[in-house]
Image (cartoon, rainbow, N blue to C red; front, side, top):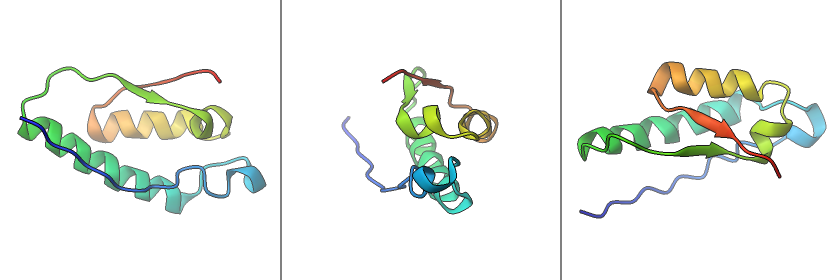
Length: 82
């Protein structure tokens, strides 16, 4: 079975100015990740590889966001280098 999901979260919006992920961008990303997690469960997907890039790497609160994602969705993200 093939499925897809597309949702723009703009996680890095405002990062350049503040050095942090904004609450609005975090909430948009959480909405998207919860939808994706639901699709994974629906289709019985057991293993996924999740990566985070520049926004999470550069943001002061990037690690906190990654932890929240794990706590709320069970998804574990690895922050990768440039």
